Length: 456
Image (cartoon, rainbow, N blue to C red):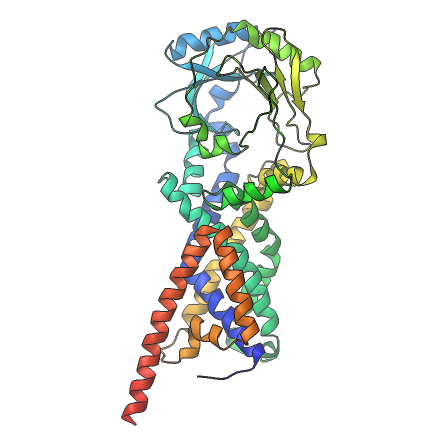
């Protein structure tokens, strides 16, 4: 067994782990960065592409929501359930009447766009999620989150989010461990300089996007929600039960598509109630122009009016309104959210490029491009330093680097790896695959070494 100092052993371990993450997970991080950049770069393109549906031409007094909904229902047909209405309250903006269509996927709704003044139908298309994105960005979003493969494809984005923060912190740690070598001015150190500069520059963003990405993930997201619930960090939700009983809601239910599997009796919706419920919400302090009115799906539930303006300053207050008495039964105010719930809201909105408007977009576009360059440059460094032939040095394996650590170091890394694997299951499974592949490589390298020794 090759012996080395503890500092060198830790450096070897970090180097091999960083190499494996870059080699095997790097392509997934690259694709997530590329598609994420496309997503945040296209709101203006989507607005131009669907300008006719999003913008109204008529000038004058807006018609009641009931009249707008009646037009939308004629277009959609009587077999679809009315899901929600997003009124066009700003000048030149259309009203979005959304229907639950069983032919669509989770979090997707059929939207009829109505001119609130002339009652002209301006568009008919699928919208997605709380953000209400249209088909162009919906396609990009599906590429970004799941490679357009549905739930199985979400493993790719979770893999990227699980390892990106490790790659970032590991790269910084490796930079500290190799400080003495950087005094030597050679070609490799010069090539490495750009990789290091980008790594330091992008560190905060990589940590932020890992954290926010994991909150959306399929497996780790559940563990994150459990932790937030234990720490009282969950986003408050309005209680919609007319009986007043406590209610537990999953704030990620729509994003995960959980609502698609719910069974509930069909509830007739009276269109005139939309105007009355909106007026009650206005009197209760709901003053944003971007909001959603949602009727209940069950008889013992209240209507909800929710602000959906995710820009700065954040407007996401909500109220529950009794449809019989038009009294506000419950409300949530963003100013009263726990600090961690506020940070989560801001982090997610920043991740999506909407918190600070155009500045947010430009910053994320620059970040995404720089992250892609960082990964490509890392591959270039590896390619320039790749061995001319297969090396039989066992020290080049992750397993042997780990074995060279002090006993306490092996214990700490083992416990840390197990805990992270339990908290982030996709990381745990991929780490196990790393170890198996690396152990086989170590066995092969050791076999070559032993064979060479026996000949001599």
